[in-house]
Image 1 (tube, rainbow, N blue to C red):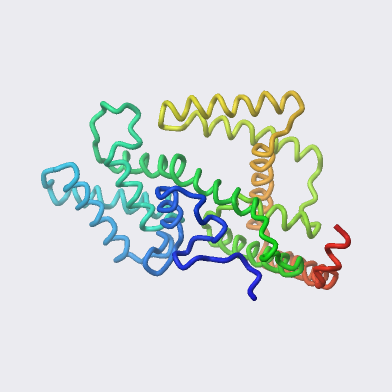
Image 2 (tube, rainbow, N blue to C red):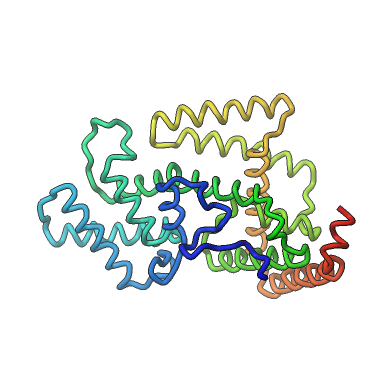
Amino acid sequence: MNNLTVIKNDGMPAYASGKLTRSECGTAMSSFASIENPRISSMGGPQIAKIISAIGLKVAVRLGRKPIEEEEQDLIDMEINRDLIKKFPTLTEREVMEALENGLDGEYQRRPEDPIIFTPSNFVQWIKAYIAQTKTPVQKKLARLAQDQKDDEWIIPESERLKVSHEFFLSVVKRVLAGEDYEDWGNSVYTFLDNIGFMVVQKEDKWKAFEFAKRQMMKDALESPDVAVRKSEVRRVSQLVSQSDLGYQGNEIIDRARRLLVTQRLADLIEMYEEDQTAYLELVAERVEYLCIDLKSPEQYNQQS
C-alpha cells in the first residue's frame, strides 16, 4: 500500500474531503496546475494571448462595453500580458479567470455603490484581492487540515518522510533558482532544514525575523483592499503583536518568521557560485542519506520518540 497522502480523483487530498465549502473547493481546485490548467509561467505566447482574448470577451459581455479602437485595445492587451507574466507567474489560468469573474461581480469593491470599471490597473488589484481574500485563506485551511491529519493508516515511515521532504526542498530550490515564487504555508522547508541540522540560526537573527514578521503582518493587514477585512485583520494582528510583547509568541508570527528565515537562506543560495550551490545540495543529500539509515525502521523511530 502506498503510504503517501491519498489524492481523490478530482485532485483534492482525501484529508480535505467534506472539510471545505463548495466555494473553497472550487478555489482549491483552481490552484492545481495541470495540462488543462497551466500556470502563467509555463505558458507560451499563443496560450497567454488566448487568455487575454477571453478576458476581453468576458469584460465586453459582462459590462456591455462598446468596442474600442484597435490601437487602444492592443495597448490594453500588452499591459495585461506584461502584468500576468511579471506579477502573477505562479497563478493558473483558472485562478486568473476566477479573479476576473469575482472582480466583475463587484466582490472586491471598496464600496458597493462604486461602479465596476475594467482597466489593467483594476484587474491587477482584483487579482491581488483574489490572492489575499480568496486563495490564501483556503491554502491556510488546507495546510491546517494536513497538519491535523491523524489517520494512522497513512503514517509514513520516518525515512520516507525525510525523502519526501528532501524532494520538496529540491523542487523549491529549482523554482527559486529559475526566478519563480513558491508557497510553503506549512513551513516544510524550514522543518526539513532544521531536522537535518542545516537551519542553525543565531538567537539574535531569530529575534530580528520575529520582529520583522510582526511588521510585515501589520503591513499586509493595512493593505487589504476591503475596508471591513482590513479593520478585522488590523485588529487581529494588533492582538497577536500585543500578546507577543507580553511574552506569548503566537504560532502565526513564528511561522511567518520561519518563512522569512528560509527566504533569506534561499536568497543566499542564489548568490552562490554554481559550483558552491552544487556542493551545498550534495551536502544536504549526503546528510539525508545518512539520516535515512538510522530512520529506516519506523518501529525503531517510535521507540525513540
